[in-house]
Length: 222
Ligand SMILES: [Zn+2]
Image (cartoon, rainbow, N blue to C red; front, side):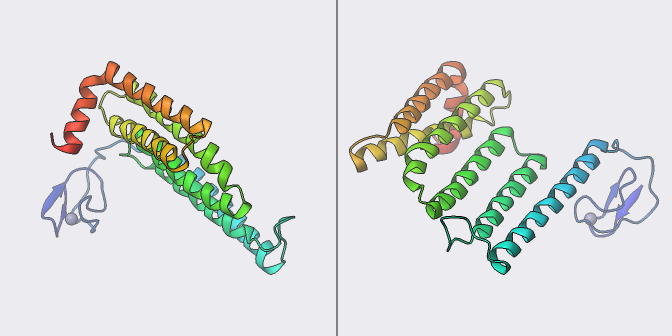
């Protein structure tokens, strides 16, 4: 058995580094405790290729934009490569999250959608698409996320999805209502988003009432 000189614990198997403090272990190793993760290795190669491609794209983009001065037709002052860089980072982040164990599917879906919406808003601002974004793209994305989280909540046994479903419903309903009061009219997509949120909230109560109640108790300490 190997030992960590700092944590003063014995570590079974053939680990070289301490799983607690990452220091080098002393002593001789034994038979490995855990199976080798072949799938993980393959994914990591895929990930490296993917990151290299992203870096390549980024560098070529920056070069064309800043050094050669290639601009998008109709947007002569727009540094499009900066937007490209932002999107590449989002995809890297999104893909990294997919490989990270420990986060539930609902968390991944929700985070990815929220970040993508934020990035899309920045992009839309530069291309003059802000109105269609707020009136159409955001409510559709939100309704889609709430629906996806509802499906996940129905198949998830641990109940980890419920918080994401309820936050999505909350965002859908509250934003819809704010729109109604600020603009004294509600864009059609927001109305649909609000209705979808309300229907799925009712569905969550009907099918998973106890989980919904438990989630509220956990969040609001009631
Ligand atoms: Zn240690």
